[in-house]
Length: 164
Image (cartoon, rainbow, N blue to C red):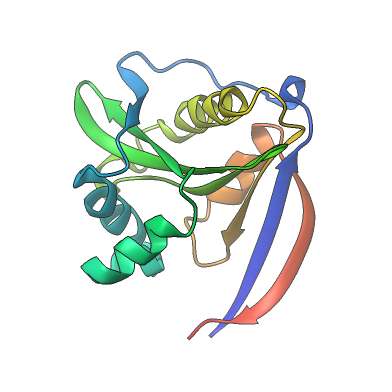
């Protein structure tokens, strides 16, 4: 299947166009060893065919070991887990490795503010960061890329691949 992968970036924290706050929606640090990490990532990614939706426990360990600085934030709505953000901080940039809402929370008007919280946390992770970036796929939710653009990300690269 042909896939379009779009890479977006923000090169200054002032580029963030924050969405209106959603009462009850929060983002809190999540310990990287929490069983919520693979559980929530798998459930978020399942509708879109993310690799996280089909990793074995051994593959999860390998993925975690790729970057010992990898951190996570749990999105909660009215105290219920609603989504997750995975970050790979580097010296002068932070990659948002994964971002998404659980299927029960999609379409409820949470995505813009959830992304705002995720971006704010990304900038806070590395005081010397000059860039926050991520990539999205044409297989992701159809509102993903428009939401990234509305929050102030700009596209810097697209590529065509074949998903296996």
